[in-house]
Length: 213
Figure 1 (cartoon, rainbow, N blue to C red):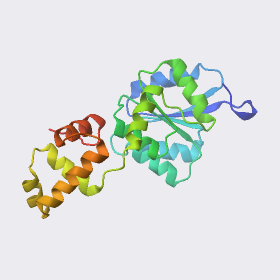
Figure 2 (figure 1 turned 180 degrees about the vertical axis):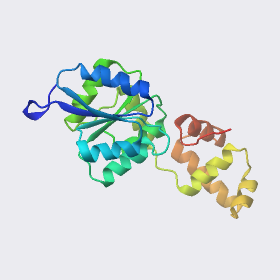
Figure 3 (figure 1 turned 90 degrees about the vertical axis):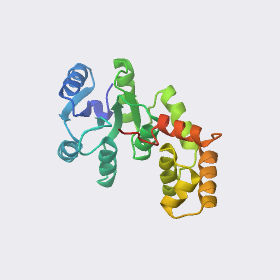
């Protein structure tokens, strides 16, 4: 596995867990054609290292304190960094995958992926192609086929998740019951579900709604 001119592919590992960084660094350091350019514990640190060390590929954790993986991706795009990004995460919610790809990630792998698959992903992404395992790609395709919910629809969906009626939602948003009903019908149509209960369940399952507490 080598880049043009037989130079190694330079990897930057970005994860807030020291054990993960150490494990990935140790594994990748033994591979021919790969050079571990460094590791970063945060998105902020990663951006500084990208500017300084100009790695070819980032293995980027999705959930980190402070600057998240998505925030880091957006910042890399803003600074027009040439490094290509593989998201490496424990989470496979549809919305996480969708947001990462929308923000510019070329690869998306779960942390329990095999060494062989990771090396294949690095080579594929380094060549400028997308690498998303088939089971994740299928979920991404399904998510992307749906039109995005509007901010108002998301707001109403959150209120539906709290068990509020159309009348209660209308009162809370200062809109008519009929307007709420139209929004709910639009939500169900976009999400391809039969009723509001299913809409909430699917939204939670796919990570569109975050349930806390």
